[in-house]
Length: 305
Image 1 (cartoon, rainbow, N blue to C red):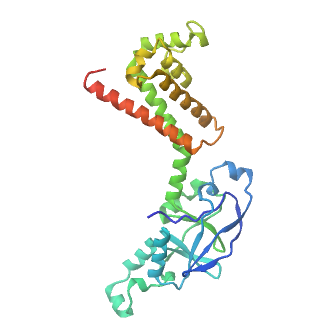
Image 2: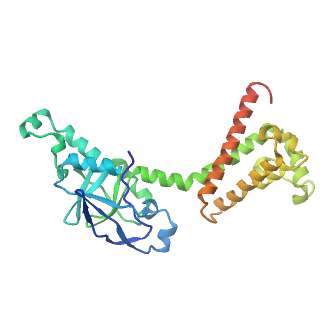
Image 3: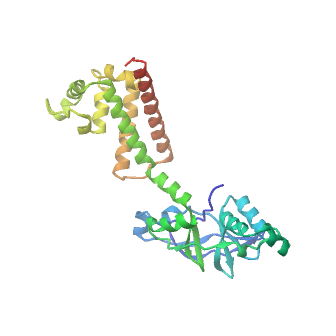
């Protein structure tokens, strides 16, 4: 089950939206003012919380069974409990389980009720409050301990941040860099498997002399740029050495490497956020090199390379 993520656009919260009653739970959206330049550029809580997601509030007198059904229905694992506009605490599957662990058969017989008859306010846990502009690393200890933090304050809740929210955000932010790293290191490894150091130097002189000057072209992969790799591989005189590890179509391989190089430049120089289609394109190119690396591994095991 996914975590309860109460969203907020990347702006400072002014006042919670008007709540409405719906099936025993209150749902509200937040009203927000503009963030500062710092908040829009640095990785703070406001960057992690999803945009335009509704808050789910629970009443303190609600039966636990009903509250659990609402959590399950909405796909949440926890929700704030509100009384007179103020947050009393968090009701969650975990807090309910902890209450059940202390509720013995003797208690059930004496009180003549089952765990589902608990009221929500009997099963609360307390989360740490953080500001919408809080630095992400300041939430780590609290999220590890409580499995979440509340954003805002008891009278103005803005959202819940969970470890999965943070993990998804960091994955989304770092994924392009990780893919570029994998692509570049894989390409180097494939080039190393295709030619010796002496042959690489010859290929470099052949493809790059016009750019660097005779005898001045870089001789090792670590001295070269990504565009150097593309130029060396796609040069007509060098291609027969690299086609066994990269594929038979020189024009297509050169086009793929050009696409990677352009995106690499935008990503590492923070020129812009890449689009979903470009994420998919990088993923496809990564998969292509992964397959080629597998072919090389298998071929080397069979002694074909």
